[in-house]
Length: 98
Image (cartoon, rainbow, N blue to C red; front, side, top):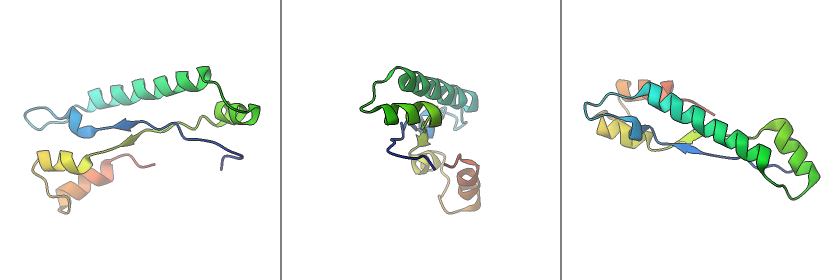
């Protein structure tokens, strides 16, 4: 648990943006986008100003960064996969969790 006041620095990745016309998923492109986004968040934490010394210290110690994903359901629909069948469930299980 992070003591004191803190704020998560969130980002959002949209997996459906990494689908090609043939329905394949660009895994390497998605990984690269995640790497770039986390690196950018690290730079922001290092160069940001904070309202109190305690918040600044905690931000640097605990690195409260985050990257979520959105529109997994849209990606499954684009692939023609029902959300509640085994193939859709398998894809959801392979998705990153926080």
